[in-house]
Length: 120
Image (cartoon, rainbow, N blue to C red; front, side, top):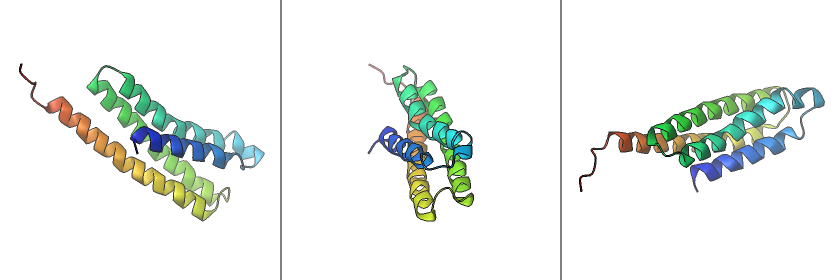
């Protein structure tokens, strides 16, 4: 599974989770959770679509920040009683796996930037 695909699964699950939020949280915490989760695969896609390894590395870094934000929103969601422990732990597990994948992508891109040029 690709980083983007797992990011899309997380974003979809986060959006579905917020459907059950109480009205007063739907536009606050719910909106924040949706935006941060959606930002992860969106930034991966944006970076992949650029013609620059350096820019891709930057966009992966932004995706990592959004992933950390998503984790925080999920923990708060559980603390406030808007989701059960099992649901948030499943989503946090996806976040953990996605974080490892993003870090590996970062390492790969950094190696590509520091590799000596290939001579013809």
